[in-house]
Amino acid sequence: MKLFDVVILLLTVVPLVVVSAVFPTGLVSGMRLYGWYFIYIALGNYALLSACLIRELLRGRKEKRKEGV
Amino acid sequence: MEVEKVVAAAIFIVYIIGMLVIGVIFRRRAERSAADFWKAAGELGLLPLTFSICSLYVSGAGTIGIPGSVWASGASLFAPVVAICGLTYIMAYLLLILPFRKLAGITPADFLVKRYESPRLMRCVAGVISAVTTWFYVIPQVIVGGILLDLVVGIPFEYGIAIISLTYIIYTFLGGMWSVAWTDVVQGIILFGGCIAFGAYLTIIGGGYAPLLERAAAARPAFAAVHNPLTVAGMWYVWLMYTLAWPAMVMRIFTGKDPATIRKAFLLSGFLHLTYAILLWIPGGAWAAILYPTLGGLMKSPDYALPAAIIHLCGPLVLAVFASVIAAACMSTSDALLLSASACIVNDVVRTFKPEISDRLQIRLGRILIIVLGLLAMLFVYYRVPLIYMIVAMAVGATISAFLFPMILGLYWSRITKWGALSGILGGIITYCLLFLTKAVPTYSELIFGSAVSLALTLIVSAITRPPSKEVKDWLASLRAG
Image 1 (cartoon, rainbow over the protein chains, first blue to last red):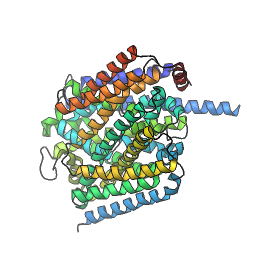
Image 2: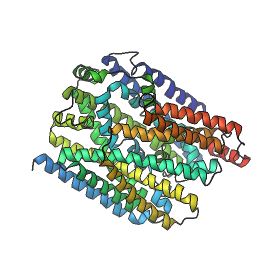
Image 3: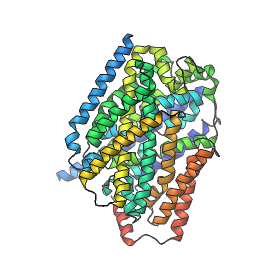
């Protein structure tokens, strides 16, 4: 595994475990806060998926360049 | 007959004919070899692969069942499920795709057999567990089809089930993985287009997420219920680990044409799934709570929450159109599961006793199993079943309890032995089933205990049994390299 994989895995698991434990179990209550919870969830997921996709596209370009050489 | 019922019936007929035509088109291609029938010869491109991955997770049961469960148990229980919609694909992207793609098998048992040097026992155990749990997951998909035809077209539940079941049985029988993948493309475009557009509409007319949730909690106090931390943790864990241990999902890795395509397809699936879940599940359940705080009228059971909300907000004509979206979701998951369950029986169980089975016989057996398992699922639905979502969670929970650690630990740690893995598989699933049947722990948390037992047994038994051979260690290193 590369450093990128480890960082993404940590970002994936740690903050979302914490947030998912805080809200649904009632440690933080109030439906209005839930709105922000879902926004955080959506942005966090999109950011991580985008990071992986950009990495994938860059990897593809690099491989094509190598093949060209 | 009312206009909306005529429109709904017309949409259904066109839709069903379209799916059957795809089955006929791919019939010859599926018959070229067993690899063609089970995994489209490992040649699927980005578009069909993305939709065929998504269709396993985004099912009819999820589309109807989760808003229904949000109505019944509250938004908080499903907050963690939404939270992992993108992340679960990232887990597979990081941990599984590259090594499994190098393996070039058909089912997850192909990895377990080679990894643990157990061509008979491991293949048979893994095949039986995978086939049973995968088949079980077909049942809620069929129920959803029956509910929709009942509500929208007015066809009695029992007949609706038969129409939906026969359609996907026939096209899967004809075209194998090829028709499953290409019907998934059509179904996926309809499903995601419809769900995302409709979910956005629900959120906008509710005034945004927070006001909508506040109104739902005011109308139905159960919507704001909090849950046992173990229940919440179990819910989070089951769907996060889904892509790593659910056999049908792992089998998708074998169908893509190259590692780069497979990796991109998993990530794109994450984008689609997340958008669909955020926009549809919670707003759908919230609107049902506002409009129908208690059961009665159109709300015959919690599973009617989303269709009832659509009829109330948009009228029956829109529901008629939306019904085709849900039918797409039901069939796109059912066909894939049916094919996977058949593959597990033929590739794993039958090959345990007859390793040199010809391609022709594999396809013939596979087709017979598709008919038998499809009809059995249909008949099973006629018996009374609990909440749709419960069946889904149970089938997935049992599988993950069994396979997660023997597969992932076995891939990344060469010290895990055959007996460690076997005891982990059996210990995990037995613990899960006992806890589920006795209700000894909070609902949905059975998986945590099942997984813990599986992990402990895998490690302890591996520590006291003979380590794997050098060949296996070298092979594992080659899988992980690159």
